[in-house]
Length: 72
Ligand SMILES: [Zn+2]
Image (cartoon, rainbow, N blue to C red; front, side):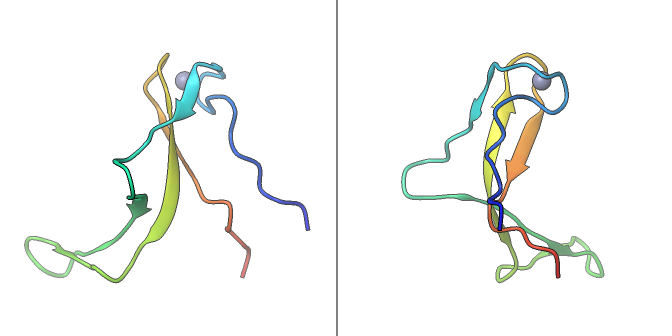
């Protein structure tokens, strides 16, 4: 199976001025969810998809990357 490649340029503007956005040491970013049936929405502490975040300094767009994505 072909592995998922890390992005090397901005998917919005194509710039190569694009690099990982590092969280503080020993942590990672997570794309998570909230329950919108409550007010205010409640954070679901057990849900989440770990993501690497890349940022473009030309246009400011952030890109999320997860190398373990698969089709069900
Ligand atoms: Zn860009």
